Image (tube, one colour):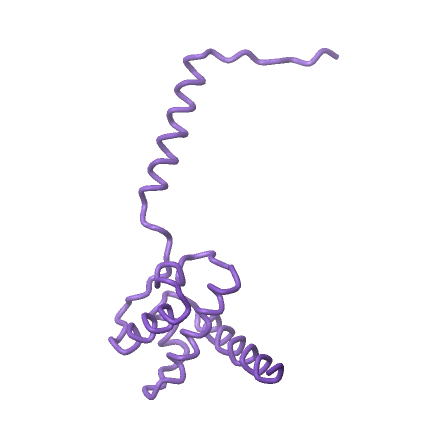
Length: 125
């Protein structure tokens, strides 16, 4: 059977490309998709975020960008959750999760992974 090729009208292709370019432009203009990091968060927690990010060479926007799974970014996020959890105020996991718009089990996992990584680094040293 002979291959059927469609010949598209050049005007149609121009419109499709223009719509696609417009959609991509709107996506780029949108703010980066971040975890909601300021929902009734106390000042001391915001300071912890700023300090941890500065120490690890990231901005809070980079650290809390959704779907950012690079190892150093994840480690920074885990350290932030661990530091907030072990602060003198000792907030609960659900409280921390609500500040970031996450499920509390995500925070539990992050804290346990950070503790596991720290133990492994100490054992190697």
